[in-house]
Image (cartoon, rainbow, N blue to C red; front, top):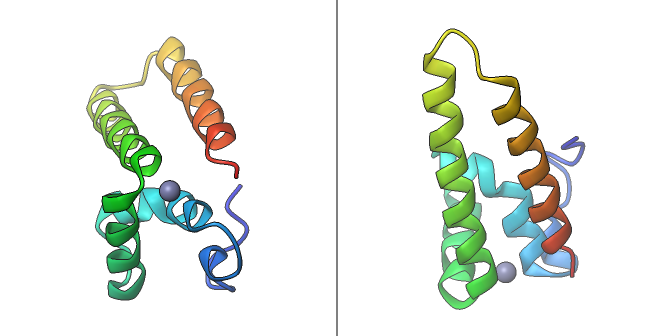
Length: 94
Ligand SMILES: [Zn+2]
């Protein structure tokens, strides 16, 4: 799904929300490089929509992590997660 990694950062040409969106999970994993990390952090401070999305994503990440600690994520949770991600991706379009 994430075909654009290592290429041109999305936010430099268009909407900064797309950049935040594109790097959100890596950012939450703490694996994003310093430059993008500080850009996203700065953006989130002034963009309520992305701040909200980050809260949702980090909650989601927690849930997935918790589910993964069990033997298997319940199928219902997986479906729910996929739906939420689809909705948020849609919302993030500018
Ligand atoms: Zn934004």
